[in-house]
Image (cartoon, rainbow, N blue to C red):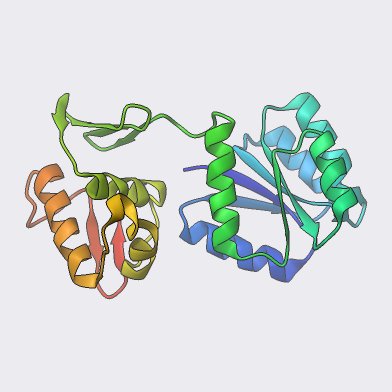
Length: 223
Protein backbone atom coordinates (compact mmCIF):
# COMPACT_ATOMS: atom_id res chain seq x y z
CA UNK A 1 0.00 0.00 0.00
CA UNK A 2 1.34 3.43 -0.95
CA UNK A 3 1.66 6.04 1.79
CA UNK A 4 0.77 9.61 0.81
CA UNK A 5 1.16 12.87 2.71
CA UNK A 6 -1.54 15.43 1.86
CA UNK A 7 -0.56 19.00 2.75
CA UNK A 8 -3.69 21.15 2.51
CA UNK A 9 -5.28 23.71 4.85
CA UNK A 10 -8.87 23.33 3.64
CA UNK A 11 -10.43 20.84 6.05
CA UNK A 12 -13.28 19.91 3.69
CA UNK A 13 -10.81 19.06 0.89
CA UNK A 14 -8.68 17.08 3.34
CA UNK A 15 -11.62 15.03 4.62
CA UNK A 16 -12.97 14.34 1.14
CA UNK A 17 -9.61 13.38 -0.37
CA UNK A 18 -8.56 11.21 2.56
CA UNK A 19 -11.80 9.26 2.35
CA UNK A 20 -11.60 8.87 -1.43
CA UNK A 21 -7.91 7.95 -1.57
CA UNK A 22 -8.44 5.43 1.22
CA UNK A 23 -11.21 3.83 -0.88
CA UNK A 24 -8.69 3.57 -3.74
CA UNK A 25 -6.20 1.62 -1.66
CA UNK A 26 -3.88 4.43 -0.50
CA UNK A 27 -2.82 5.21 3.04
CA UNK A 28 -3.04 8.97 3.65
CA UNK A 29 -1.75 11.29 6.37
CA UNK A 30 -2.68 14.97 6.39
CA UNK A 31 -0.86 18.12 7.42
CA UNK A 32 -2.47 21.57 7.40
CA UNK A 33 0.66 23.70 7.80
CA UNK A 34 4.23 23.82 6.53
CA UNK A 35 5.58 23.09 10.01
CA UNK A 36 3.32 20.06 10.48
CA UNK A 37 4.28 18.74 7.04
CA UNK A 38 8.00 18.92 7.77
CA UNK A 39 7.48 17.25 11.16
CA UNK A 40 5.64 14.34 9.55
CA UNK A 41 8.26 14.01 6.82
CA UNK A 42 10.98 13.68 9.45
CA UNK A 43 9.20 10.87 11.30
CA UNK A 44 7.45 8.92 8.52
CA UNK A 45 8.44 7.52 5.14
CA UNK A 46 6.09 8.54 2.32
CA UNK A 47 5.80 7.46 -1.30
CA UNK A 48 4.30 10.71 -2.60
CA UNK A 49 3.44 14.24 -1.48
CA UNK A 50 0.23 16.08 -2.47
CA UNK A 51 1.02 19.72 -1.78
CA UNK A 52 -1.13 22.84 -1.76
CA UNK A 53 0.76 26.01 -2.66
CA UNK A 54 -0.92 28.36 -0.19
CA UNK A 55 -0.41 27.37 3.46
CA UNK A 56 -1.18 29.35 6.67
CA UNK A 57 2.45 29.55 7.79
CA UNK A 58 4.24 29.76 4.47
CA UNK A 59 4.35 28.51 0.92
CA UNK A 60 4.14 25.03 -0.51
CA UNK A 61 7.12 26.04 -2.60
CA UNK A 62 9.29 25.98 0.53
CA UNK A 63 8.06 22.48 1.40
CA UNK A 64 8.73 21.27 -2.15
CA UNK A 65 12.25 22.71 -2.11
CA UNK A 66 13.02 21.06 1.23
CA UNK A 67 11.57 17.72 0.13
CA UNK A 68 13.55 17.67 -3.10
CA UNK A 69 16.80 18.46 -1.26
CA UNK A 70 16.32 16.05 1.67
CA UNK A 71 14.03 13.22 0.54
CA UNK A 72 13.46 11.08 -2.52
CA UNK A 73 9.72 11.73 -2.73
CA UNK A 74 7.70 12.75 -5.82
CA UNK A 75 5.55 15.87 -5.43
CA UNK A 76 2.22 16.76 -7.05
CA UNK A 77 1.12 20.37 -6.55
CA UNK A 78 -2.52 21.27 -5.99
CA UNK A 79 -2.86 24.68 -7.66
CA UNK A 80 -5.53 27.33 -8.08
CA UNK A 81 -7.19 27.11 -11.48
CA UNK A 82 -5.40 29.11 -14.14
CA UNK A 83 -2.47 30.12 -11.93
CA UNK A 84 0.23 29.71 -14.59
CA UNK A 85 2.96 31.32 -12.50
CA UNK A 86 2.47 28.82 -9.68
CA UNK A 87 2.58 25.91 -12.11
CA UNK A 88 5.85 27.09 -13.69
CA UNK A 89 7.43 27.90 -10.32
CA UNK A 90 6.47 24.51 -8.91
CA UNK A 91 7.88 22.59 -11.86
CA UNK A 92 11.11 24.59 -11.71
CA UNK A 93 11.46 23.55 -8.06
CA UNK A 94 11.30 19.91 -9.13
CA UNK A 95 7.62 19.10 -8.74
CA UNK A 96 6.67 15.98 -10.69
CA UNK A 97 3.18 17.10 -11.70
CA UNK A 98 0.39 19.51 -10.82
CA UNK A 99 -3.39 19.45 -10.91
CA UNK A 100 -5.63 22.51 -10.86
CA UNK A 101 -8.49 22.97 -8.42
CA UNK A 102 -11.27 22.06 -8.66
CA UNK A 103 -10.28 18.61 -9.89
CA UNK A 104 -12.02 15.29 -10.25
CA UNK A 105 -10.78 12.79 -7.65
CA UNK A 106 -10.41 10.02 -10.26
CA UNK A 107 -8.19 12.27 -12.36
CA UNK A 108 -6.01 12.89 -9.32
CA UNK A 109 -5.69 9.14 -8.69
CA UNK A 110 -4.67 8.65 -12.32
CA UNK A 111 -2.00 11.38 -11.94
CA UNK A 112 -0.76 9.79 -8.71
CA UNK A 113 -0.36 6.37 -10.30
CA UNK A 114 1.38 7.87 -13.35
CA UNK A 115 3.88 9.76 -11.17
CA UNK A 116 4.56 6.68 -9.04
CA UNK A 117 5.33 4.67 -12.18
CA UNK A 118 7.43 7.41 -13.77
CA UNK A 119 9.53 8.03 -10.65
CA UNK A 120 10.13 4.34 -10.02
CA UNK A 121 8.09 4.33 -6.81
CA UNK A 122 5.62 1.94 -8.35
CA UNK A 123 6.70 -1.57 -7.46
CA UNK A 124 7.53 -3.73 -10.50
CA UNK A 125 6.83 -7.04 -8.73
CA UNK A 126 3.59 -7.20 -6.79
CA UNK A 127 2.89 -10.04 -4.36
CA UNK A 128 -0.50 -11.19 -3.14
CA UNK A 129 -0.31 -14.34 -1.08
CA UNK A 130 1.14 -17.04 -3.35
CA UNK A 131 0.80 -14.81 -6.44
CA UNK A 132 3.59 -12.74 -7.97
CA UNK A 133 2.85 -10.23 -10.71
CA UNK A 134 5.81 -8.81 -12.63
CA UNK A 135 4.36 -5.64 -14.17
CA UNK A 136 7.42 -5.09 -16.37
CA UNK A 137 7.23 -8.53 -17.98
CA UNK A 138 3.43 -8.81 -17.60
CA UNK A 139 4.10 -12.17 -15.97
CA UNK A 140 1.86 -13.80 -13.36
CA UNK A 141 3.13 -16.77 -11.36
CA UNK A 142 1.80 -18.85 -8.50
CA UNK A 143 4.25 -20.98 -6.57
CA UNK A 144 6.76 -20.48 -9.37
CA UNK A 145 4.34 -21.70 -12.06
CA UNK A 146 3.33 -19.25 -14.78
CA UNK A 147 -0.37 -18.50 -15.12
CA UNK A 148 -1.49 -17.40 -18.56
CA UNK A 149 -4.08 -14.60 -18.55
CA UNK A 150 -5.85 -12.78 -21.35
CA UNK A 151 -5.26 -9.01 -21.65
CA UNK A 152 -8.56 -8.26 -19.95
CA UNK A 153 -8.01 -10.82 -17.17
CA UNK A 154 -4.55 -9.34 -16.53
CA UNK A 155 -5.93 -5.80 -16.40
CA UNK A 156 -8.70 -6.89 -14.04
CA UNK A 157 -6.13 -8.46 -11.71
CA UNK A 158 -3.96 -5.33 -11.74
CA UNK A 159 -6.91 -3.08 -10.92
CA UNK A 160 -7.83 -5.25 -7.94
CA UNK A 161 -4.21 -5.41 -6.71
CA UNK A 162 -3.75 -1.65 -7.08
CA UNK A 163 -6.77 -1.20 -4.82
CA UNK A 164 -5.72 -3.92 -2.38
CA UNK A 165 -7.28 -3.64 1.02
CA UNK A 166 -10.20 -1.64 -0.36
CA UNK A 167 -13.52 -2.75 -1.78
CA UNK A 168 -13.87 -1.86 -5.46
CA UNK A 169 -17.37 -1.80 -6.87
CA UNK A 170 -18.44 -3.53 -10.05
CA UNK A 171 -19.05 -0.12 -11.62
CA UNK A 172 -15.50 0.98 -10.77
CA UNK A 173 -14.12 -2.19 -12.34
CA UNK A 174 -16.18 -1.64 -15.48
CA UNK A 175 -14.85 1.92 -15.78
CA UNK A 176 -11.25 0.73 -15.40
CA UNK A 177 -11.27 -2.20 -17.84
CA UNK A 178 -13.95 -1.51 -20.46
CA UNK A 179 -11.57 -0.57 -23.29
CA UNK A 180 -8.89 -3.22 -22.77
CA UNK A 181 -8.23 -5.24 -25.94
CA UNK A 182 -10.99 -3.27 -27.67
CA UNK A 183 -13.68 -5.34 -25.98
CA UNK A 184 -16.94 -3.95 -24.65
CA UNK A 185 -17.43 -5.09 -21.10
CA UNK A 186 -20.85 -5.02 -19.49
CA UNK A 187 -21.97 -6.21 -16.09
CA UNK A 188 -22.64 -9.79 -17.22
CA UNK A 189 -19.28 -9.98 -19.00
CA UNK A 190 -17.54 -8.78 -15.85
CA UNK A 191 -19.06 -11.68 -13.92
CA UNK A 192 -17.68 -14.09 -16.52
CA UNK A 193 -14.19 -12.60 -16.33
CA UNK A 194 -14.10 -12.64 -12.53
CA UNK A 195 -15.05 -16.33 -12.67
CA UNK A 196 -12.36 -17.06 -15.27
CA UNK A 197 -9.76 -15.25 -13.21
CA UNK A 198 -10.71 -17.18 -10.09
CA UNK A 199 -10.59 -20.46 -12.00
CA UNK A 200 -6.97 -19.68 -12.90
CA UNK A 201 -5.78 -18.19 -9.60
CA UNK A 202 -7.65 -19.85 -6.77
CA UNK A 203 -6.98 -23.28 -5.24
CA UNK A 204 -10.74 -23.59 -4.76
CA UNK A 205 -12.62 -21.14 -7.03
CA UNK A 206 -15.88 -21.84 -5.16
CA UNK A 207 -14.26 -20.58 -1.95
CA UNK A 208 -11.88 -17.87 -3.14
CA UNK A 209 -9.08 -16.72 -0.87
CA UNK A 210 -7.50 -14.15 -3.24
CA UNK A 211 -10.36 -12.34 -5.00
CA UNK A 212 -13.07 -12.02 -2.38
CA UNK A 213 -16.67 -10.96 -2.93
CA UNK A 214 -18.04 -8.33 -0.58
CA UNK A 215 -21.74 -8.95 -0.96
CA UNK A 216 -23.70 -5.99 -2.24
CA UNK A 217 -20.55 -3.86 -2.64
CA UNK A 218 -18.04 -5.48 -5.00
CA UNK A 219 -14.70 -7.25 -4.75
CA UNK A 220 -11.47 -6.89 -2.82
CA UNK A 221 -7.99 -8.33 -2.53
CA UNK A 222 -6.63 -8.05 0.98
CA UNK A 223 -3.59 -5.86 1.56
